[in-house]
Image 1 (cartoon, helix red, strand yellow):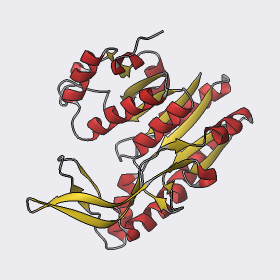
Image 2: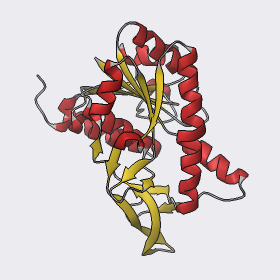
Image 3: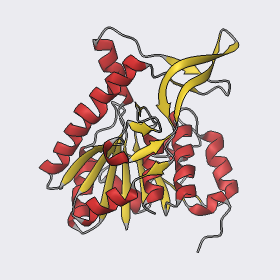
Length: 277
């Protein structure tokens, strides 16, 4: 079994438990790929540089980052630079032969660039140009499989590389989904809540699993904000070939093992309307 672990970039997420679990799984002979984001650290770095991150609203009401050229420079500095290096070093300190990669390295994550986006400003829909983001359409799974076969644990982050060979931003949850799909892996998405909750303020309302389209509808109806993006990524992972997806608490004891043993919210390929083998 290959396990792809998405480690959240939120300040409330402590990666120590995930690092220890990856080390244990690798020691037992399991193949692991770690994917991480770091949007919070990008915002903090922009603030230190005296600049403000810019968020825009799409006509569909989704709020997301506008990545201009300067912000893209900070992404390249923070994610593959500091955060990827630090996480790779943590894993190596725990005995994992970790190897850090951005989506640009070896053409790991590729797809078309979105150089312009539709945004809503003052109630009007406008076109904003100068966007540095893209949609991952291809994963160099041969590269990942070669590294895994050689005993390495890839530690992956954005940026991706666009079809014009430009490094651009991409959502880290969707990057993890693309990797899990390409490797037919189990995807564990670690975040700062126990999973998908019926009531976001009550951990006791955890939805433990979804295996049918109807159960997926229920999950989607309560997954608001950042959790909505994670459920979208889960669907993309399953559609791409992932064996299953778990959204679980990064701060629980043994978070990956707990997720694989039934903790968190489990989504299986049946949510897409397919017949499970």
